[in-house]
Length: 510
Image (cartoon, rainbow, N blue to C red; front, side, top):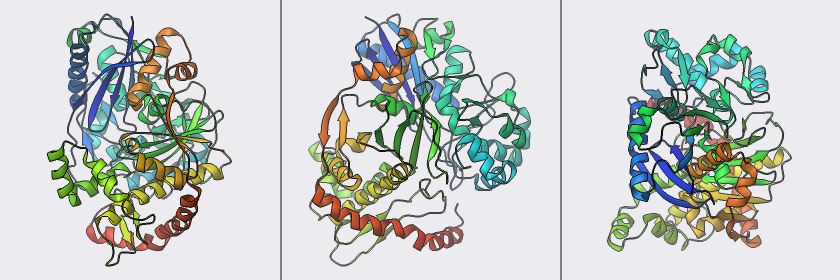
């Protein structure tokens, strides 16, 4: 039997899985690494930490499953998007990578839009210049670390750096490249216009591949370190959102997904290239060759719930430890005791600034409507409802663009909660389903590996390997009640925007 390996290089850990040739996951292993925040709003990681964790994870997974490396027929990569890896002429890392959640580049984004032209930038790349993207980080390096900038000869994204170490070959897939702000997304090629106007040399950018294309083969020295076999094909893979969508079967028109991780993403498949005229949604290439997707991104979805757990759920954490339970299960159970709408309490989940529909690094979180009746259960439910309202904002933009979404597939940690799945169905007003694949981006990466090795297209593999396991229909009565709360929620950002900016400026944060 042959196996396919999926590697997901996340923000906090690399997850390694093995899938057999029928699509069954036979084992997984994760290795964590640290995040550095040298200044408020900054987020960096050392690429060497990714490499060491990946080597450790692959070896440990082979040991855990007792599967010889020679039985691994192919490897696929998923990875955190947008992070900038700067390499010199001998492929050495110049400085720690600036990550997707790094917020230091607001001035550089303004510079890009004025230099390229906001309309021209949107026409070519399908997106506005946002602080998370890669191109603003390049400009920041040129302006703030000119000595390092002078050494740059190659620019890669996180997973592509690790694949370079494994194969010795440069490459980047279309989906991940879409988040650099340097790709002509409609034509699936580097944009000479954008690169020239920003004075970023095109020769720094690697060759482009579709996600299932073989981008290199395992080097003998990498094989010795990992326990795999030299020459094993490694496909280009994709950014984590494209891989996550493939991993739950969002590969046809009308199907969308919600990823409930640290960030929250509403993702919809497009057969043709479509752009939100106000660029509130991202328009990217999909991991399905020749297809595209649009997505809205909430920066602190599960991150808001995690913040609530860390700072205000000490009793629940202690109980979870004593009873051997998941603390989030306890918290959602408590939240279910509060009434729908949390008795007039709303939560704005902008704890890390926001991206969709408000591209504003100075947006802030808030509880609105507190009174003496409110207890912890109300506040916990309000957090979950606020996150879901924020995700609904992205669905509204997708609907307004003319796309009919008939089914929503949920994945990520939050998808395990039946209470939260029902809440999503009620607030979104469409059926919510779960599928048999629960490994998200890593599973999508394994599908891409199988596609590249077996020569079978990604869509047909998804349809063979992925089945619906649960379906939740919206409760019409709840849907109508939530609609009234949602309309109030939608107006709060505009009312509070100036206040958020004033408070952010007083605190000296971006």
